[in-house]
Each structure stands twice: as C-alpha cells, then as structure tokens.
Amino acid sequence: MSIYVGNLSYQVTEDDLKRVFAEYGKVSSVKVPTDRETGRMRGFAFVEMESSSQEDAAIEALDGAEWMGRDLKVNKARPREERSPSREGWGGGNRGGGRRY
Image 1 (spheres, rainbow, N blue to C red):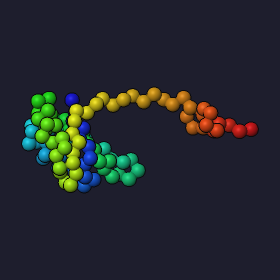
Image 2: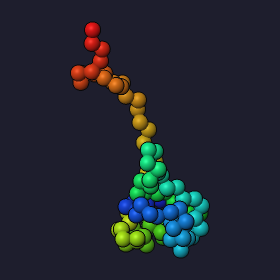
Image 3: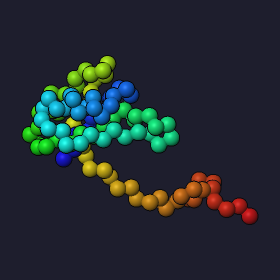
Image 4: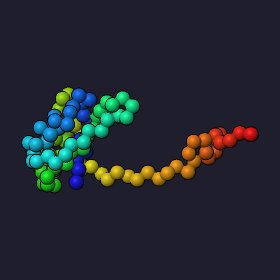
C-alpha cells in the first residue's frame, strides 16, 4: 500500500520525505510527481513503507502536522481510477464543434 502526502511545500525533496517518514519505519520508495511542462513539483507525493503498521503510524503522526510552513494531508493512497476514453474528443458532441462544410 502507498501513502498519499498532500499540501507539500514546493521546495520539498525526496530526501526530505525519506528523512521524515524514516522516523516511523523503513521507507521503501518515495515518488514526487512533477508538472510535465514546468518540471515543478505538484505539491504532493507518494511514500511506500515496509509494512502497513509503519504506514499507519506515520499517517497517525503526520496527518495535520505542520511541516515546512504547511499543514500536511497524509492518508492511505487510493488506487488510481481508470479514465474511460472520451467519445466526444475534440469538437465532437453537441458543443458546436465538428466539421463545417
């Protein structure tokens, strides 16, 4: 299972997160998503720990805690929802798009 960590400072690094979460157990991985266009951190991360009891301890201690000037939002990550392909696409449907002759 993975932990979602939200409302992060844009200056936070993977190493910063590893240090904080290591206080509650062994950190298996840290993923810090970045914006594709700017390369800037998006303000959230995912942390995986060795056991669910370590994850639970970290969530209990860190959810709502102030860190780097922000109140953290820490909880179990939900599985990513599959997006269904849009049937309308660009200019489809009844939105005034489509071909004009």
